[in-house]
Length: 85
Image (cartoon, rainbow, N blue to C red; front, side):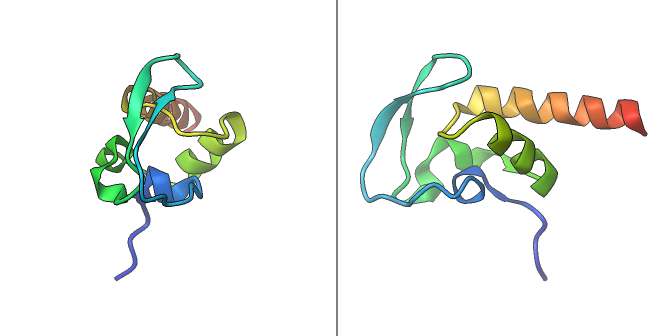
């Protein structure tokens, strides 16, 4: 069975590195620890996004976002989808 969602780190095509780093969210400026190796420890693995949600985020941002911003963007996308249906 093929899942229709992926974890954000994988979705955005972020290289899986064996180290952690402190990043600043390009959307809100909040700092967070990016844990791409192993990706399942990273905060972005706590949210699943659809292909459409990932595509929208990729058009607006080129780097990792904090979990709070990912949640907000997902919610905003879903609200917009409900308006158009």
